[in-house]
Length: 279
Image (cartoon, rainbow, N blue to C red; front, side, top):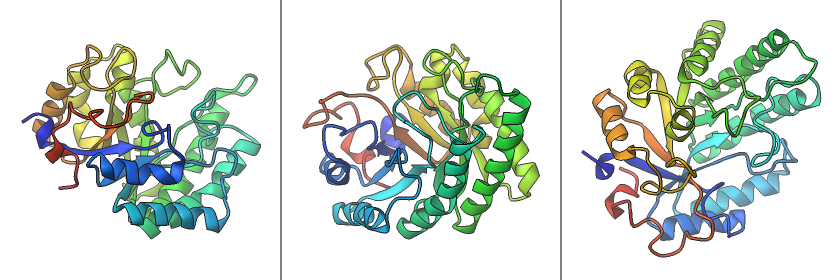
């Protein structure tokens, strides 16, 4: 057991950010990773030009990396936004316009995990109105994901960095997963279990793993406090990943931590080289 027994990918929206986007797949490959994930990279363009999508696909292919996780349009991320799908008006419209673009791009690169961030509460809007809109948009996203053989992921965030985000526990996120699966009948919505966010919320991580490992479609990690690499904080990540394995989770673990300008040689020494390439 331990890190060497996990299937890791690296999030190139938060790591290797000292480089232009199209150079990051090659940098990930040089560090030993063959699988990457990312947030939606065009924060002002839910429907980018096809040439931009083609350039990203070429960068992934040329590096020999596979995209295994991608966010739907989520507004300004990193930044003040935490998703668009529950925000009435223009942001909801942008999310809807983005859904088929994401699904088609995912199909073109073999990506089968699509993350839909719920969005913050909006002043003056009834939360029930936002939740109804969210379910409508998540249903659209789940159907688009199903069309390309992908899982729709729904994530809980932490209340320190995202106080207006309504899904602040594993239970809250899984409740939304259940509502989406009931609405579509497809069963392709799943929980994105982010150990950093849950630990920052003070959750009982072992209890959440026992309760929700079977509902989990993807895992992300960073240490806390600080959102740094494993070993920089106090979260027993290696033990928790072993608990996930014992609970039956066999999926990937995304590295979604901050490293500043420290993603050069030696930056991933905490992770055995054998655990970086796809298995």
